[in-house]
Length: 156
Image (cartoon, helix red, strand yellow):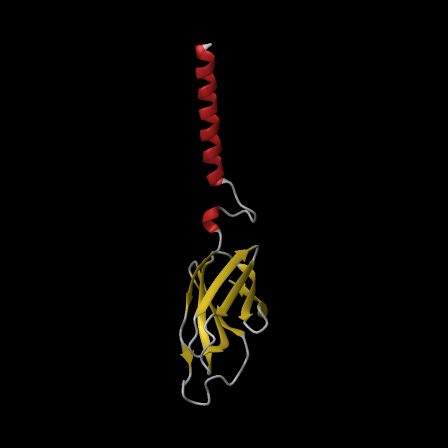
């Protein structure tokens, strides 16, 4: 009987080790290992674009993807948008199934001036092909996120 429990313990430990080793090597949804999954790295606030005292502060209310850059395994998305001239940005991003969704809000609504911003969102992104990019802005007056940019880009 003592040998039966010892044998059972050895079988359980072997199964545990075998399952643990296989999980690290298993591909995820798109046939990618967990190390290849896209990851949101950072938001870079490049401050107000233009003269803060001039009339050119915010001549447009357009939100758009100004450019994107791929350098090795890093993807940088630069968006242009109007915001409060003394913002307190709060950002988040989700990456899944060939889509990046960025949500941004300005939590400080006290300044009485507007400014154009060109800020960067940086991702670890090792993939090629079409990428769906969505940029959502939190509108305090409407109390909800509103999609401002919905576009596709091609990563070569």
